[in-house]
Length: 295
Image 1 (cartoon, one colour):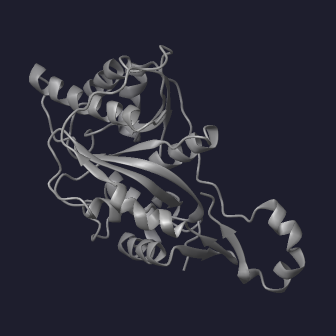
Image 2: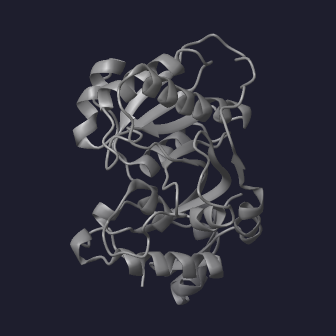
């Protein structure tokens, strides 16, 4: 059954959430509060075929503008993507997935809340696109996965189902690195690859974060400094850094940012015109009312 946002995250079994997510992806719809929410079957089924692996940093087209990037802070990466979709409905945001280099989706079979990548897979259609590619991931590259559908909220509020929206994902691993010049050059090359891939694929908004600063233990201050330097080299992008509490201070200091946003995904509701037109029928049998996913 769909999970309510008020339910404690401690009562949620992440493995069961993932199973339900895969059932939803197979059926291409889910039900919540008497509504049937349809997902775009063609878009979902073709997405894994459109994903591809890139081996190294690519060259991006020259920026069309010299305006500086707009950079903000957020907390949850998919909530940040929802905010960008609302602000820029004409474009699709790119979300950086802090990927496992050896397994699609990381440790999804476990019952722990787990990593950022595992959380993304529970809440979206990302896993089939990752599973279509061969592993391990390239040392300097990653996987670009377009047409990823987001339809769940954060685990901390129980992975609630909500109105779907679409993103692209770039899955790449940032291993544990030192802080000597060789390591800094490696991190910079990885970051450059993400930014250049975003530009090459036509994205103008990105969700980034403290890449490699969790379990892999990289220095958030150093990673923030490298992001700042590489971002300064590209054209105008609207960027939200989705950060955990332990990394926020470092990124705020380096990027010169204040407090950011912390929004939740949009709730499921029928379009207003459909409600008005079909109100008598809906009153008779609310379970048959549909919300069709917009393409």
